[in-house]
Length: 475
Picture 1 (tube, helix red, strand yellow):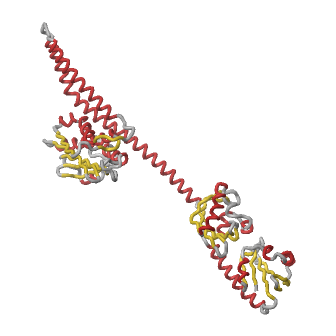
Picture 2 (cartoon, one colour; picture 1 turned 120 degrees about the vertical axis):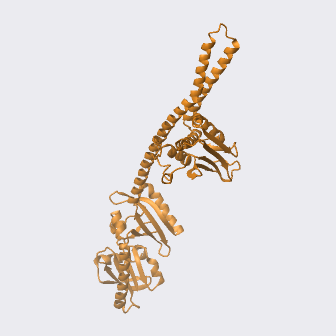
Picture 3 (cartoon, rainbow, N blue to C red; picture 1 turned 90 degrees about the horizontal axis):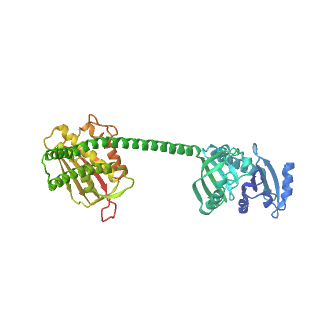
């Protein structure tokens, strides 16, 4: 007994039989199997007679034809006349079992929430579930004429061919992404997983429509770009505001720096008027007065140069000496510190240690922290103000601690001190410390933290050494 399930293209999709050779007929076409009898069988199917005797493979068979309801597929029954005496009974049982298994198989496929299809070794469709048919807008009859390659967009056709060859060679492919084209020309993004069934020489393909996921991802990336652009603009604005605030503080420092030399110049001018009342002034006296005046003028000019260097934006990272940079930064506000009788002590283990970064931004951080410490000390009205700066080098980090005796930070403010626009000062902007944290952590890959320490606060700046670097170069 031989039973063949055949599709509209006359391709055998299921075969049952007692002979082992009968199982190899799957996926073959009738004209290739029944070479000598094809015309006879074709006419028989067209006139739809109940049965017909044919001679095939040196045996005589009784052939019966049955078309499946609501389908273009059909069944051919080949009953060996000498063996199959109880053909009707066996035929009924086999038919019932086959149809039941087919219905179960079809129901499972059609209920799946993904497109499931069966391909031959060339990628041609042998079967596709309802989900896949609706997704691609093709009927099953139309899909028989198509392949997974023909349904790919032009840029993915060659990749689809390569995927078919690869799955046959390797057995499976997971999440192969490509663009498919529906019957009506709509492009959809798809993710496909394929497995090759060697015994059947077929490929099972599961297809997911990820178009919405791709759109969501694209929209998310656009939104992220917009937010990053907003953040960048906000950072630039805050940086500008921070530098304006620093400029105001620096102008105050310049006033303090210049006050003493201006007073000295005034006294020298008055002494010239006094000396002019004498009939003769020695050349030596004039030279001495000139040297003193030029010294004061040079000091004032150097002060302007120092402040101008501070406000020049650093365009690229470079190595700079940490101790010298801290020392130069303190020089810019030294006059204010002296006026308020605040002593600054620097304890440095290694004055040659260098840091890679933006030198002027680093100066701005040091000045911000020291200036805040100075204001805290002044507000507490301490008779002896002290700012202690410590530069430590460990096996893994370089650490800069800036401590003061200005009374510390209230507990409720400690976790907010680096927030933008958050300030505890009467006329503060709340930008300085926030920008200091941005500079250290985002621009220089360090860490800036704060804690209350003894009679004041301690700001710590830490930079991790590059691994396996004997010179302890910093990141």
